[in-house]
Image (cartoon, rainbow, N blue to C red):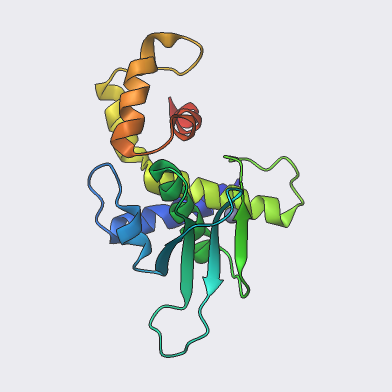
Length: 178
Ligand SMILES: [Zn+2]
């Protein structure tokens, strides 16, 4: 629980520094404040990487590598996820994400690397779907619950496009507060 709050707190601070007022959140512009962002073709199972830059003359100490063969919503999630690792975890060596699941809760509590992936996802969810913006829109669109009921399907599709996130990520996110 404490860890979840830490990731969300950090995300809110990033959003407030970037003065984000509306969706979609410009995650590349935000992440560029902290790291070089490089899009590269990589094998399909690699979403992204966080690489320390050795050159002391460079202003930025890290590069976020995003697999450019993936869809835009996926690349956005990857950039946000890697930024989460950068801000939350004290890595010294390159970190690669191989096909991470959209996982927000650790089942195996004592597995530190799983906990870090969960935190990076929580950070990404809050950055790409900021609570205050999302809550405003769900009440405007009158989305009260998410389940097998198809009545909200169209509103959820529209909301996913508006925030430029996958429908899956949005649905998981919505279960947190509606
Ligand atoms: Zn990761």
